[in-house]
Image (tube, rainbow, N blue to C red; front, side, top):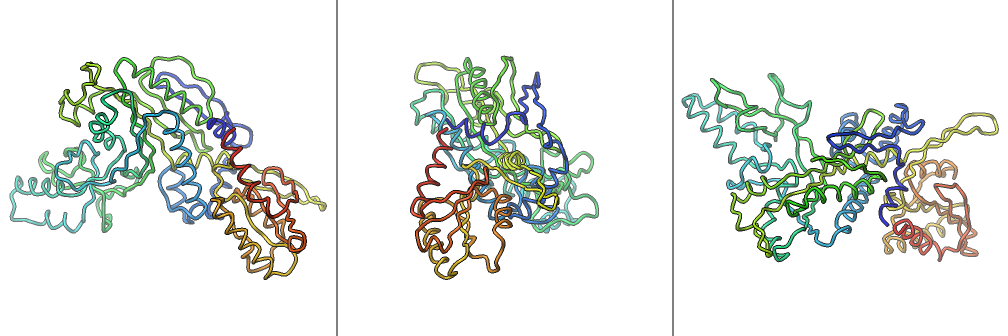
Length: 472
């Protein structure tokens, strides 16, 4: 069962499940409350290539927004997205995938359906505002027309599902329930990036234009937009369409499913219209997913209230109700990293204290499954063996780290520490003994135990290990 994946990946004590009417919290475990561990985590994910360096980039990642990912972070993000998608589409039969654009330049699109973010060229706005010969009414009209021609950026994925409802409703022979799922980037105005007086505006700026409410005004009329920095967030969305009488049951069903996925095994019976699933980071709790029962208003608004489009084959004239699930994939990735970090202190023979940092990511999430290194022996021949093994693992779709390409000799203990911090499941060392007998040494990240196996068995060993983790 996939739920076991979450149980193994995330300790149960760090999640908060919140209905709007109540909150149930389990405290953090031990040293995880220490802010020093949070700083250690953020420094480690930069040092090991999960995200690109720089304070601004780290802050973006910490806020749960899309940042600049490094090679390991990109692979981990793909793994999280894949598992999130499987948990959605694999739990029910009638879930369909769509892929909608993140922006739209169509004049037929109503701003309220997409949100209120538009991308504009600042020079074009200045040119419009500098037309001094225009009257106030003409200037207001000119600004509004300019903004209406500017591309809209989506702020969520729900609207794309609403647009696709009618054709998919026909596809399922007008039978409920069914769902529409999508993952992609959405855009939001930055909480602290608005451009005020005297500030510079980037070449491409985001314009917030909610019916004149946040625009620069003259005598109550909107003249110019407010510019902000755009913030990208990777969302995963499921929009579930069901009959009105079953919407509360479906909200409860999906709440249970999502709580299982995020490692929650208890659900109290409550009457509520919304659900939030939180993760408690050292700096405070943040929402990972939001579930809500949205009724039918948005669907009617999208399709201009033509109820004949929504009538099912069984003759019911009621409009489908919506249960939506929106997950923040970037924040979920940070939650998995935060939960996986383990710190182990030990003393050496000289009583000097050493700290071992390990990212114990679940096998399905770990960006690298095995690192290939070389021991003592003929370097050229050992590299050739490693290259052949790396190619074999690649064909089996098992991610391997080419540690044999290290240009300078590094002690194996130091390499093991590096791979532990990268979350690598196993380290395979090819040595002179491998050339003679075909035997290599394999070290486990989780147990640090080393065992010997034939080189021909490594591929099957890793495949069985990952498959077992998936099926538990």
